[in-house]
Length: 123
Figure 1 (cartoon, rainbow, N blue to C red):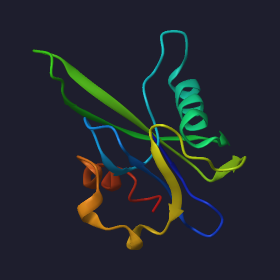
Figure 2: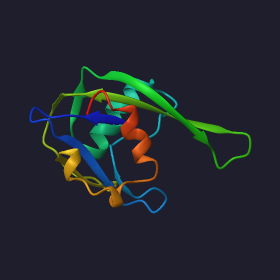
Figure 3: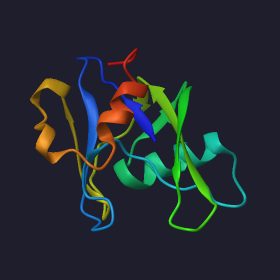
Figure 4: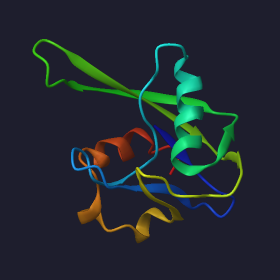
């Protein structure tokens, strides 16, 4: 997942439409077998937003129990304010820049409050 901040201080949000994890979050996705974590976040952001990101910084991680017994999953979190391209939404959902204060908390995705806490130094 990557928090992207523009020159006005607005954040890039994704309003996910997937029934398994709907709501407002930041764009991101899964790592494919042939890529590094950094390559994965760059690719996922391109797929979901049409933006090319660079100068990406690792922020932290979040772990949770998987649906599979005795298994955990981990999310890696990145930040950048360096990007280029024309913002376009994808099949994942609508993407848009906004100030955090303008986002209705009732529309947050699952655990988005935890994710925001991980990014507290970048908000």
